[in-house]
Image 1 (cartoon, rainbow, N blue to C red):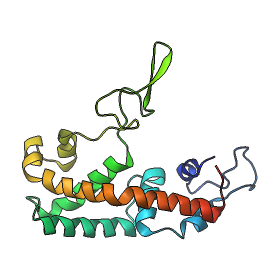
Image 2 (image 1 turned 90 degrees about the vertical axis):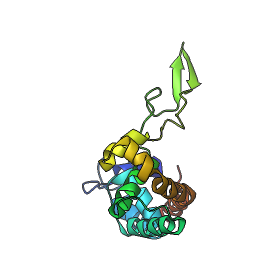
Image 3 (image 1 turned 90 degrees about the horizontal axis):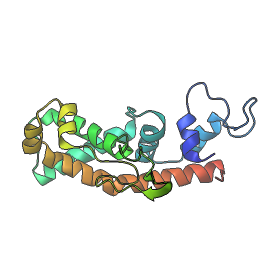
Length: 186
């Protein structure tokens, strides 16, 4: 069982991560929590949002928020309403964590065509995920699509570029630290 599967099973009632069930053999939740104690706050945020609770807001979230606000103000691309930066960060995190499955391949990245498995050729599909459309982002913000494009897309782009630069490294570091500290081999 991979680290990602163990993280996805993490909840208050989990006692053991063994595949056979029963007893306390193998890796326990306490072992996983102890392994997670050595990762950065941003890495913990991504791990928790991606595998455990998609709406989690820990200390790492507020660090990302403050850095996003600073980058937006430095670039001079403030949104029309100042209180929209936090919802923009939420949308960008949801988009990064990959809750948008490709409709062609159902998130697998592969399509069965005439008995042969092929790579998904949908234009927007990247490893089974698709980016959110501007109209979907506008609905989540509670504004119109044109209003989003005129007043919020620049700020969203700054947040998104920042997250794309920092989050993949933080996530891979966190997963490798968990594997190393828990001594798991997949």
